[in-house]
Length: 139
Image 1 (cartoon, rainbow, N blue to C red):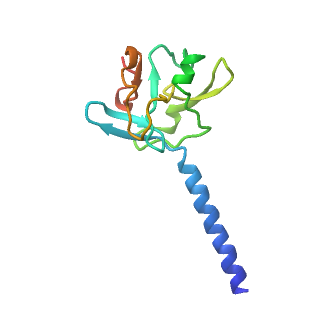
Image 2: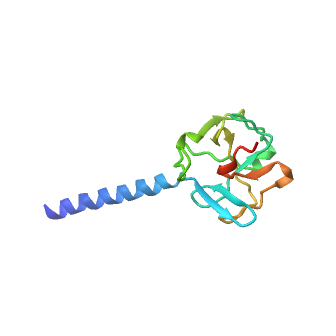
């Protein structure tokens, strides 16, 4: 009987560990870098961007744009300390894909950011920017 109980406990612990790890996969982080300041990333540290031509609830990036600036979507996210989870949302784009938003604005990656902490898309063509949660959306 002791071995069965031990086995059941082990399975429960394993399941909880996997559930916790999977849940953390959707966490948003706030990073900071000299010359950039604070910015949002996904759990792996990949930078999230916003597009100046977007408006709250609507993406202006489609077709080839989305190939270079892939959409960020998670069904739910865990907000970082100091940010309310309600500040994140979801839109359905014109191409019927879902996209996560921050304060109404759609979130993107940049395909040329290869490593965690890369911010190579910052300021690209004067319309792509990292997201400083303390000053977003910019006035």
